[in-house]
Length: 88
Image 1 (cartoon, rainbow, N blue to C red):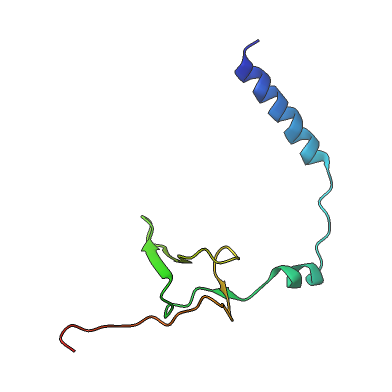
Image 2 (cartoon, rainbow, N blue to C red; image 1 turned 45 degrees about the vertical axis):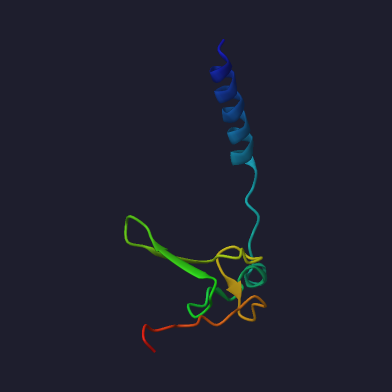
């Protein structure tokens, strides 16, 4: 029996065990603990924006905020973006 086939069989057994386990009930209190107001402020010096191939605009913090996907409302690394014009 090949190594690849053994790996697939092992993964299939693991997947069957996981499918048999019950999914725990999630309450509103559980969700409230997970939901945190996060955003990357567009006026922050560290905000970087890119557009994916399908047109979705992604904005992320370049300094690696503690929370993935955004910064806390009171982010301690916030620096107001300076806009410099030419000839001003």
